[in-house]
Image 1: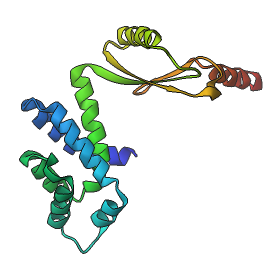
Image 2: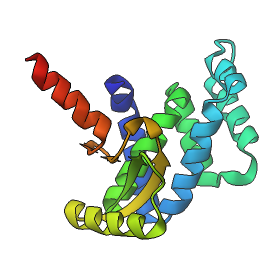
Image 3: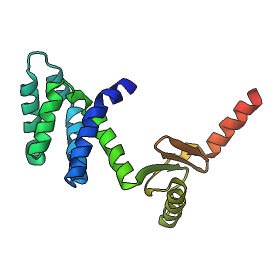
Image 4: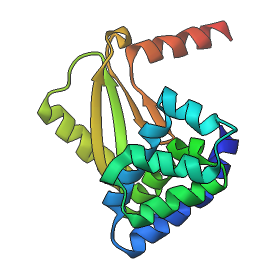
Length: 178
């Protein structure tokens, strides 16, 4: 996976720098998100892997599928990515772009998985605490997983905080084994 990220990084960085210079981070994020979704479609994957099609044909077909969702600069970006045979990297490019955007905006997406549904007040309180700890604006995404038994698991980028009963039991079992 690291190799794909390495290949995608220059494209994501170029798109980010262009979008930032023109104050179009949200637009480019949306366009790249659409491009990533389209590139993952089974039919599109077969077309992108077809050896008989030129890179220009692939780019043109890709842009036609996306319709008028791409401005001229985004279409040019797709052509450049296609010329270098990197259209299959669009999901990684979009992901890196969103990471650069979040870093610029000092925000982070946090996934919280809890054994029971968190009410609005609990989510707000958790978001404030995490915002203070991470030094960023927190966008909280809550989910439920009854197998946790109790507690929560918090994921913010590379940071994982496992405060679940299942996690504590696993730690205890590991300690007893050693």
